[in-house]
Each structure stands twice: as C-alpha cells, then as structure tokens.
Image 1: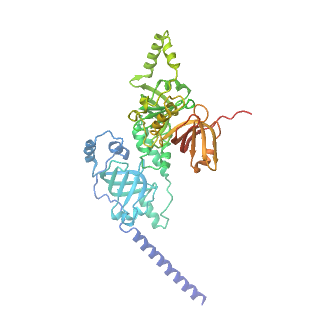
Image 2: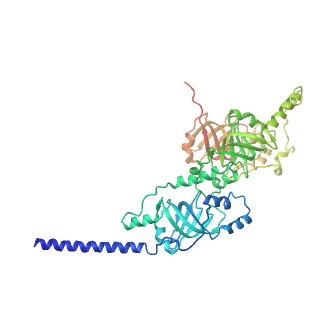
Length: 489
C-alpha cells in the first residue's frame, strides 16, 4: 500500500514538473516573439564618426552656416551609426513604446525609433541604462535633440550584450539588474570631454546651457557646473557697475547682452585695475569660472586679469598715465579747490535742474527687473547734499519708485515688531541709510545676521530718504552675508 502511494505521488510530481516547464517555455516564447537580432544578410552603410564628431558639425557650437549644414547632412542622411549613450526616457504610453531618448552630453540628444520586432528588447531597458545602439540617421534638428534614428537596435545594456540577457532570461535569471552605470557620471564625462576640446569657452555657449532661459533644471545645472568650475576663459564685455560701496570695491559687473551677466571678483592685487576702468568701458578680461548663479547674472569669475580697456592694452594706458602725471606735476590745483569750496546755492522752484526732465533720465533696467544704480548714485540725487527742492525730488522720485535694486551695505539693526514687521537697518555711508522690509518667511535669514555683517541685498524702492528718515525698501531679500570678524573680549 505504501509503495503504491509513493508511486502515485512520484507520477503526479513528474506531471506537475512537465507542466511547469511547458508553461514557462510558452511564456518565454510569447515574451520573445518577434525578437530578432541582425542577421547581417542586409548590407547597410555605417559611418565611422562618433556622436561628438557629428555634434561638432551640426550642433550648437558648429561654425557652419545653415546652408553648409544642409549640404553636409546629405552626406550622412540614410547611413547607420553605432554609438553609446544613456537612456533618458522611454515612450510614455503603450501606443508610444517605440521611442527612446538618448543622452550623450546634456539632456536628450538622440531619439531612437524602433520597429515592431524590437518591442521585447525595448522592454528590457530602463531610464539611466547605458546602451550601445545602432540606427539610421533620418532627421536633423537644431536643438539639444539633434538626431532622429530609425530602424534602431540595441546591442548592449550596461555592458551586457542583448544575447546574454536573453540567454539569462531563458535560464530563469532575473532580467533586471541595477545599472552599473551612473547616469550623472557618464553625462558629465561626455561634457568634460567636449569642454576639453575647446581652449576658450564662449559666454554665449555657457549662457545657453546655464542661463535663465535654459530648459535644464537648477539641480542639474549645479551638477554639470562641476566640470566648468575652474576653466579659463577670455571674454569681452562692457562694465555695468563697479563695487557698490567702499567695503565692496572688489567686484565689477560685466554686461554681455542685457544687464550685468558676469561678476568679476578681484583680490588686493587687482585694486589698480579696478581704478582704471569706468562704467560703460569695453574691456577684454581673463579669469577662471567660479560660482554659478544661473540667472541673468550667470556666474562669477575669479583670478581676473584685464588685458584691454577699449582698444588699448593696460600697459599702454599705464604708460600714458605715467607720462601725463610727470608733465602735469607742476600744475596747481587752484581751480579744483575753488570748485570744491563753491558755496551752496538754494534753488528756486523755477530753477529745475536738467536732470529732472523725464527725457534726460536714463534708467537701465535688467531682464530680471533690477535697475543699475548704486546707492551713492541714487543718494547723489535724493540725499541731503543735493540742492533740488523737495517738490523737485518728489517729481524725480516717480521715475525710481517701485524699481528693484541690488546693493551692498552693513547691518546696523534688525528685528521683528508686531506692527512694523520684519525689518533691517543698513548703513552705506553713515548711520541708517536704508530701512529694508522683509516678508515673514525671511525671518530666519534676517535674524541670522548680526550687527556689523556685510550683506548684498535686493529690494523695491518705496520711499525716498528725508532729512532724517532713511530710504525705505520693501520685498527685501539677502543674497550674500559676510560675517563681521569676532572681536576679542
């Protein structure tokens, strides 16, 4: 009886095992139905150029005209390539499964279009996978997405061939293994290689990638900037501003298109260079890329050297200044002294200065809404030393009210009152020159400062200063804090 029971049990187990094998075989057959690897029977023409080679010909940095690009494209269109890149996206719906975006440097550069027989292999790839693929060049675009490839096929996924992956699946080994490839590292390496091919990076090229109109996220920009930081540049621009205070002498803003786009930062050795340049001077400068801002103000540059001011080298200007100083060493300064000692004149209402005429006011406003005027320049118009009447100042103030500025000054006081709200007193020359009002969500930032700290801030001009009261600015924000040195007790 026991032998019969064991025999029946063994037969049932064998039947179950055979059924399981048949079922698994049918499932695998269904999964790989229509999946075929290239047989080599059809002869196709492959080009030897890499993605970077064709990107240099047709990409954003190409020196070819549009007409020349079209002529060159005719030599490549319809031919096949074999490249390696990173999967940036797959088709977003079941009806859109046959598309995959591939990244080579920044965002998606190549779009692969697969035939129906490749559906199974497309299922095997995931975002972030590093793949080697082939495809036929079919369309050329003029953006980061540069090429569309048809008849696409995938040869390797994360350094494993598609044949091995299929074989592993047939053996029951999991199809999924976490990508050994780090997408950020690969993209950055590709970017690094493309940068190293260029001795001098252009402002326009960096602005396209990192500027306010770039489609790249701020987080991704900061990741990519790691390979730009420290790179040497030689650019030419116009001086938009110089340091906005006596304690802020080491900065110069440079305009390349609209507003201040680059901030040059000098050390003590650069003081003489800063003294030589004036606002609106066209200068040629060199330096190393430092801090990324990613706004209209793109980045800062350190280790700065100014090569030319206008069409003259710094050496030529210094030589001319030295000769002029020697020739004028015997000149007396009576006239200058007389101007300084000229008595004040109290102007009548009818004696309206030319500066108050609306058509003569030149307010330069940047794309991000800031006006380019230092505290000293504004105070020269509305401060105690200006000789306009109060009504004349009121009339002129209308041109500046509700405009946003960026200044640098010293914290004199800060606090939060039940009625007055979150406020800060800021010194530029003497005493409290500016009262800066903040929204409540800035409380941590404001109360984190101490008296004597040097800050760079922005705000909206609301009330001009009076004989005693300071300028009042609302919608305040602090962009940078330089802590005051601690004093020994």
